[in-house]
Length: 328
Image (cartoon, rainbow, N blue to C red; front, top):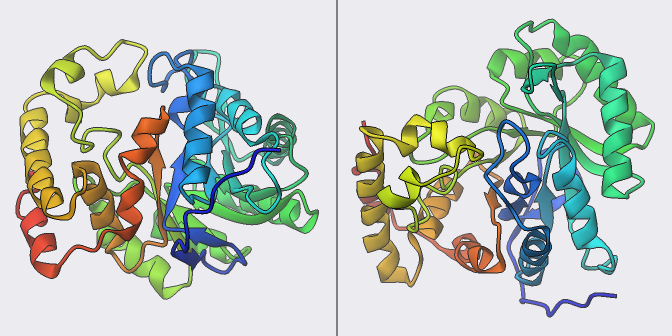
């Protein structure tokens, strides 16, 4: 059995209407899916992935977020491998997602078909080697808002059947949240949120805060762009198998402005002994609507580069200084 050294008291918060008490940071397993799918992050070593997850647990992180789509199931298999032998008292919660399935063109398609969701759930249970998924989330809504009715009812049924403990959504807007809430309570929302992507601040975050829906934001470092280790040279050299090579934020004219923001984060972080990435994450956690942030890592060293964000407290002046440098 793997034994982890306690890192002391780690701040936790209740996730929405659930009985889950989660750390402010969760381990994001998107990149662990590898390169062989449309939204991969380039080649990834599974042994490094396992070591990264175990390092996060060692540092006190008590939840992992993955998805069936990540590497077409490979990320879930790696999570299971990393958790093999972890004692029950130290085992983190495992969150995963459904409703994004491979299509004939090699891409991914949103599907809220009840039979498809049930197949996905059974496959995730098998890959993760668990009897129950702690939080099961709809990865993306479809273009038809009415599809939520049967899809969300299916997740509610899976909860009643004991296959999942709690149910949440990802990438939903307010109208979609309202549609789901009319059928069964939504435990959590997983939206993108970073200094570069702030659109959820206008309507979505106020709504979820008013309705006791937990919020676990993804890409708080904008997919590695705000870590402090991304450079023009690295961005230009991203392989075609890394989806970021096609992302406008990693290309000019946006790249220069984003890297300038990183230098502002670096200067503030220097006052706290923190990395630019930790400052970027701490900024997202400063929003009172945010329960926790999902942070990815591909190596143990990357975990060490962001785990301090959970304890970093930025002053009002520092928050204003950061926001003053956000690209228009």
